[in-house]
Image (cartoon, rainbow, N blue to C red; front, top):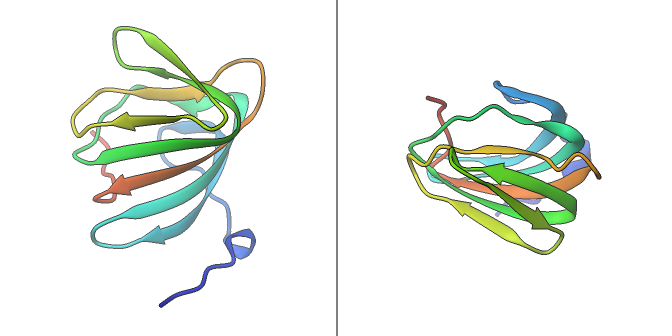
Amino acid sequence: MKFVKVGEIQPTTPDKHYALFGRSIHSGEKVAVARIWMSAFGGAEIHEHDSEHVFYILKGGAKMFDGKETHYVEEGESIIVEPGEPHAFTGNGRVDCEYIVVTAPPPTFK
């Protein structure tokens, strides 16, 4: 068993991301969990992974571009990205966003 004080974790900005920082709560062989703060104009360029992502919005809102269309998500909602699906998760241009992302297995960028 492991107890984590998330506020004591050093925030970082992942590769291919901008105007956001995250705290990696856990990164094991099977799953990674992070809490992310993203500015209204932050996000990631379009990319894909060999892993599944589950985004859960804690505060604010964001948008997800799937390579064809843009989908909006608000506080209390989730988006699930399957392995190999192109995606760009970005701010909505109106409000900052805080979210949890669970990735299984931990991501590698393509």
